[in-house]
Length: 111
Image (cartoon, rainbow, N blue to C red; front, side):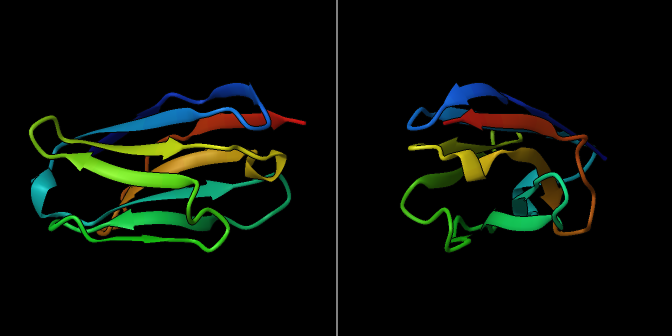
């Protein structure tokens, strides 16, 4: 199993970013996928999940700003992040529901 995140960067408050996670080594379309984040000095937290049938769930802190989606043809899951805030600064990780993790991608939002 391999998960490779991309799309992170340094942006200003109010900007947008789109994270991608390319998956391989398992039958992607059957898996619930999730995005998590970990800010400095804080525990890793769930950001969003998407089931194999496309049902989504979000942390309250990102509802209305972030959108998770998946492309089963490309074995990829995305996280569209709009109206970013400094408190969104963290390393963002992709995860399968069988507990495989990517290496993470850094998102830094300046005020």
